[in-house]
Image (cartoon, rainbow, N blue to C red; front, side, top):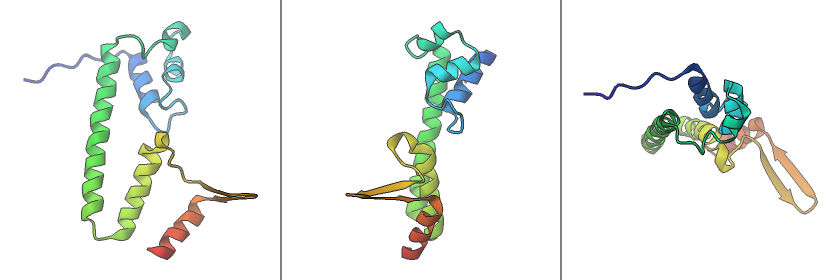
Length: 131
């Protein structure tokens, strides 16, 4: 029998949405997400330090979803015969899941006095040229 999940308060649901959504301006920033959700500043400052069952459950659920997605992505990329699809799937995963690990759509190359910024379109053309 499944354990009945406790319904989240609107502020709690909003916090999790703001905190976990990569498109949110306060993505992965607990303090800003808590303020946007309407929590008081004093609570927002220590929201992750407090022992909140709803927060732990929300973060664990998100982690499980990401782990499943990563596993399926690895299986797909390993099995796919279509290189273009593999490249697109890999770029999408790195852009969305790898933000906190330094992956971005812009690449800077520094060489002494020269700085080159390669945008998404240029990067795509380089990738297409060599694949």
